[in-house]
Length: 342
Image 1 (cartoon, rainbow, N blue to C red):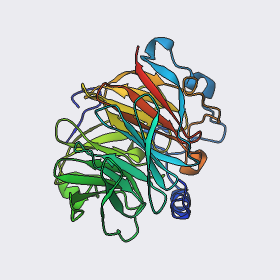
Image 2 (cartoon, helix red, strand yellow; image 1 turned 30 degrees about the horizontal axis):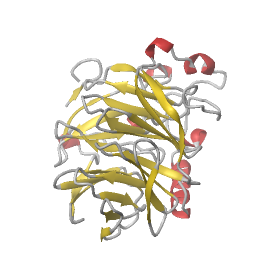
Image 3 (tube, helix red, strand yellow; image 1 turned 180 degrees about the vertical axis):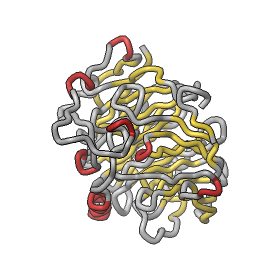
Image 4 (cartoon, rainbow, N blue to C red; image 1 turned 45 degrees about the horizontal axis):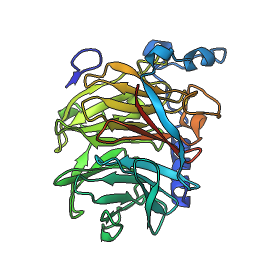
């Protein structure tokens, strides 16, 4: 395994209970981007210059918003996905809402419970994560299958490939691998010294993943502030990312919270706390910024979250279409903003 950074490198009661469990279970989490990574907490008199950290050099903002924010019509939008044709999908309020690229709604797909994740395959199939299980729908909204429930899980992201489907389980801090019929094929990301895998740290219920163009799985390890690349059978190839309150790294207890792939290479990440959407190249080098608090019209307090309970407000999710347009879901306002390169 090589560290490639700079080198080569919530809605339903069940979800709310899971979030509470995360907050309660990680109150002793040690922030490693303080005190020179020594693992010691800074004193009470330590203060981050939030106003300065939140400022972003306009020259580094490489994207602009297209049109106005798009209302999802939801009270609790949870996740967003896009397809190569320019449609985007928002999961929330016991439904998946399908939108065209101009923001007009095409249809609602009703669900039996609050969704926590969504994925869209190249074949147009829609995978809705319902906390502990996955349901599959055709592009016109007809249910194709309902997979067997998992015994306690919180599925926060789904990635569908040609023959495999992967789901991020934030409760168990692992990635679950399935075949296209929903049969379990294995687990990825658990601590395994023989494979040189330290384990995924998920201090709060934000845990994302995707299948990259190179055929490897990219998994966000938010507690370790990095993106990890795995083979489908669970071997860790490399990782990039580092903890930092600076723009180049990921701040606080647990960032990034969302990940999306650009069609010509590189990745989009979202952060909570300081609230920023950024673009990195395939080696993990910062390319620039999509949007910061000002561009997102963010009105809630900005902070560097030392513990998960410091940032209990809803965050951001992102998706990218085949033209490279970036869709950012603001979960606190239940709106989608579309950004394109300047």
